[in-house]
Image (cartoon, rainbow, N blue to C red; front, side, top):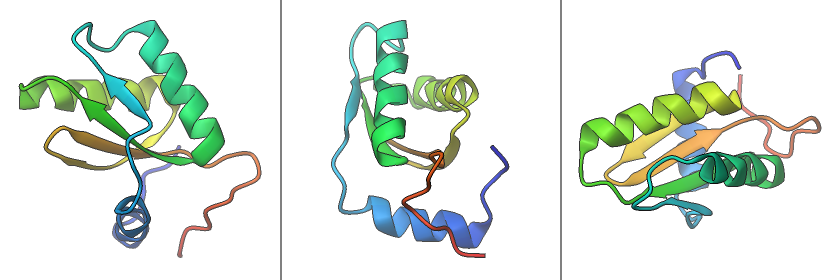
Length: 98
């Protein structure tokens, strides 16, 4: 997926604000099962929040990179333990600006 523009990122942050996390990365870390759930969430919602259990900021940043690489999603934002990612569906529900 091509990188998001600042305007698109801001738009997606606004949409994500009221959403709840649909996937949680637990004590086992980023496993194949978690990646599968993330794929399922992206297919259903395009824009999802992921809650990470790790207290290490570097670990959460690495997970965000790994998730985006593995799923073809674009990172929207990371606030504390919440990661927000976006991937357009075949028939997009979310229409990005510009």
